[in-house]
Image (tube, rainbow, N blue to C red; front, side, top):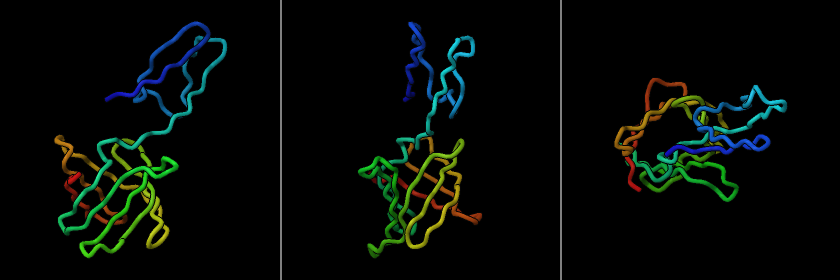
Length: 136
């Protein structure tokens, strides 16, 4: 599903695909008044939900009351293992701001299967990855 941004310049209206507009990109070079479009990359909606690892841990990705994208990782004994915030990085990367059990910020590569049921996220500072299966 593509998102579209409507840009109104004078009487002209143009539809621009959000995937083609980069943050702070100038739109309408030929116009007298240039429009600067500030957009933030969105985390893919396919990542939202509850995911299970092969170690029987669960990761929930959702939005909080302030519409920030959050994650929470819970162990098989229902112990909180990690939580924090996620934002979209460049293509196929996530910016992770972990707030528990320690404050840490890192960027991880990820890939989502064509069926949208399997997610692989690289662990920070490692060549290992989490393999997750969507359960909800």
